[in-house]
Length: 426
Image 1 (cartoon, rainbow, N blue to C red):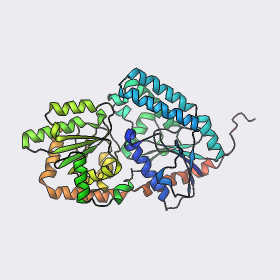
Image 2: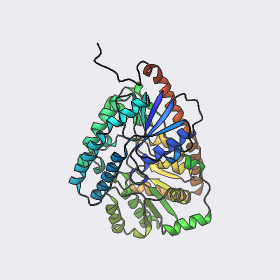
Image 3: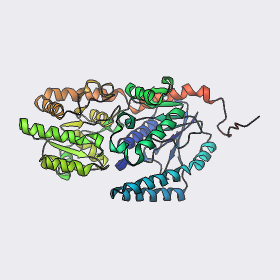
Image 4: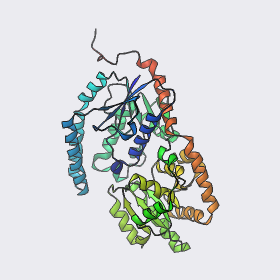
């Protein structure tokens, strides 16, 4: 079959894990050496071929937006960011509606491309599949607007309604829905009544960069510590500043360690502001932790790797599951992991991480203390993490996708991909 793979309209600064997930699968697809008889056509929102696909002769890249539309989309994004920075919520809602209406008007152009290239099935790596007139595979990260609807990031400005409408249509119309854990499958079945035979569990793959990164050099580490003004041993938490990421829980854990055990550790918060950064900074000041907390903002890719490799531990204390990418990155880069015991965590991380109740700062603090006092435990976690990281790679993920395509092939061959189906034919 001919498969259209739709990239998301993402950037590393604004999309975080979604962007990383997409890029690692592009790498895996470009490098795939397994048996797959299907042809892939990557549809992007830029004229430039993604770096990961350069030299991949078996994959065609298609720019599916005309230059005029692309310019309008860029201007709309810039305006959106400016308004968001000013926290003008009413303007945000109006602009979101405009962008949505504008993009929906591009469907006809996409459909022309789909027909011209005789595309038979689509697969979207992000949260959107711009064309639903052909069979498609939908990839689901989470359904947190249903699991935890009280967080502002999934509830204000019409966000809950938008998410619900999107998932209700997208998942119910999908030929297959892909999720990373059995916990994710259960949520999809529970909230949207999708038959289990149309859901496939494919574990998140450890990013290629984490498995292939070279050991850090002392000079490189010294430069990183100086660049971000890190003067001591540090914990690492790369996460956008959304409330559900639970930065506050970590601050309270640091306060507990300082007051009860005279244990002072620095923590590095890396990530873009999604509306909660000022609140986290104010809380750090209130708890008298300002000297222990470093806010780096978005960090370049090479810096991210070194920050992982040199960290005492990753403390990924999110309230959201069922899949999270940073613990897998840490596993591959030799960084021990303390993570939240949320839905899907045990399945995804196994015994390679210390799992804690994200609501309990004392439990978080004691997990950090146990690593500090027991270096053998820390080394054991590093070894287990490396083993866990190797269990599922991008190549494994693509192989499972090819199995889905093979399964659907006998169905899809029953109608044309080059002619519009006439439902009114007599």
